[in-house]
Image (tube, rainbow, N blue to C red):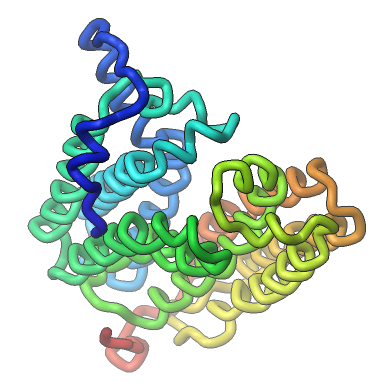
Length: 331
């Protein structure tokens, strides 16, 4: 994790407002964790843990699922806080982020840094103690370092930051899966692949909608050097096509005891097709409105696909797992 220079912490150019009531201070801390983003994180972690419970019924429990959600959510919250610490200056230059606690001076840098660090360490430690094996904790530490220490600084230097950030961004459901399964198998690989590919068109839509703000803040996005939207739209369509294919793989390559059926296949085709349609429409006319439609399609895709994967065995029973069904891919 890239440490924040002490001088930057102590010499803040934004005056910090006098603290209000304890309740208002707690609200500021909650705001730093990006609760709206955390909602999708919590769902994806729970979905990953639920899939592991289905595949390894002897290992799963409601308690372990709750532990997976809590530990991973703490790590994600810590990463969000530390991300805002490092991006305080650029956040203050963009309308969409200028009202965050640090740019507005509602909290100081040192408190934010300590809060984010405590959350991250607590989450990793909690997973180490409560998950099935150490792999979830190790992976969560790597996710935290990758997001805060690599992806966040890279946003100022290269447009490939979106690809770099998609690696830690794809981990929440995988961490939930690892917390119960205790091992990296083919399902974990497919979860990672789906989330990794999904993020690219998702963030391209956001980057197009706020391309002017990103440029003025000095953040390197592909949209900054793409005034007509040709590169952005081409990549969005290509990644949506890839997502449509990869999302169907669980129903094709997993062993019978883990293989989702028609419900999952239908959901992945409908969600992926709708996302692809939105990307094609954006490519035909790259406007902010059509980018917004693509963003909404992305937000529909993920819960629909993961939810269908979870529900599928409840409707269409599968054969019981045997040792022959387990496909391990050790890290």
